Image 1: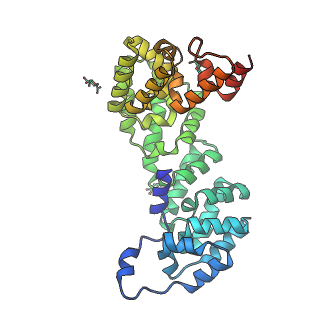
Image 2: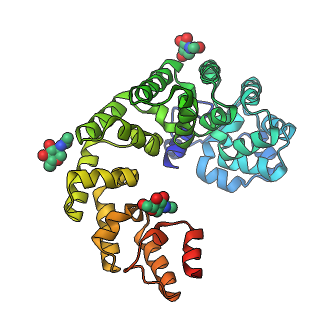
Image 3: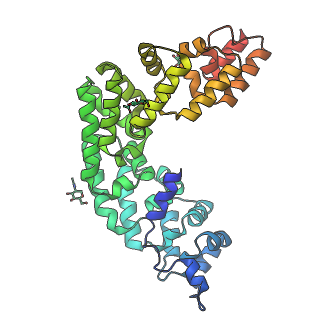
Length: 355
Ligand SMILES: *[C@@H]1O[C@H](CO)[C@@H](O)[C@H](O)[C@H]1NC(C)=O
Ligand SMILES: *[C@@H]1O[C@H](CO)[C@@H](O)[C@H](O)[C@H]1NC(C)=O
Ligand SMILES: CC(=O)N[C@H]1CO[C@H](CO)[C@@H](O)[C@@H]1O
């Protein structure tokens, strides 16, 4: 979420005003608010106090196009409350000129023809939609590029909405990352026929992958290779970790593995087995992992139980305790049996409790 917030900050339609609002407030005369914007906001039932508090500078801008924004959104089928909400969250929208807005509508409609869905996306990611015209050409090129990969429109829309940076920068940078991912996939023995689906899953799960450096990916895979994972196992990890493989780094993985091995007193071989069962282990920092280990041990779970079902480490201590309590209330003692019931979904949990 933080990243999304950062995105909306750098993609407003106009550059940040030369003087920050705070500095201007110190001056003697603060320029008057744009009466048209204010009136339109009132008409639209936009929470103007909130706008004043959070992004008051927008109200001082000339020219502004509040009426046009409302018109465009209404024309796309947005309800009054939705329009008001978009403008509270992203009042900068009024700084996009009508041609920019129209160009954006055309662009987004080309990947998301369903108006209702598109309005839903704009409501969720207004800053991605109301962006500066200077990005349009890159966006267009990128869309063309992603189409050329045969990615489905839903995925492209998701990328545009949640990782707009990857659409506003030159397409070449995306190309390098996609090429790298595809090369690794093939080198590790992935099936060419399944590559598109694989890439789609990866991108839809973590659209930010495209913004990462291919080197990070390479280093992480090299690190894992040095730890003795076979080619097939590396492919398994790459597929399971999906986009998260670019969030990792060798140092933290090294620490995490070192800690896990110490904690479980297991061999390198066993450690690899455990990681293959629970690839998520690789991205937990040591302190989180140690909290969870300790929580489990405190609850009476044994190390060998954890080694058998390492996916319990994906659960917070709070959830573990809650589930243990539930199980206990139904006469099931998790300390003596398999932890499958503990790590399972709600359904396996209730099935265990029913027995
Ligand atoms: C992992 O950590 C150990 C102990 O700190 C260190 O000796 C080793 O060089 C590290 N390996 C990598 C690949 O960072
Ligand atoms: C629970 O653990 C088993 C065995 O490790 C694993 O196959 C299964 O996918 C896990 N379930 C969940 C929901 O994590
Ligand atoms: C394939 C494609 O259209 N590439 C273009 C992407 O955008 C950059 C400018 O940012 C162009 O230089 C590329 O030709």
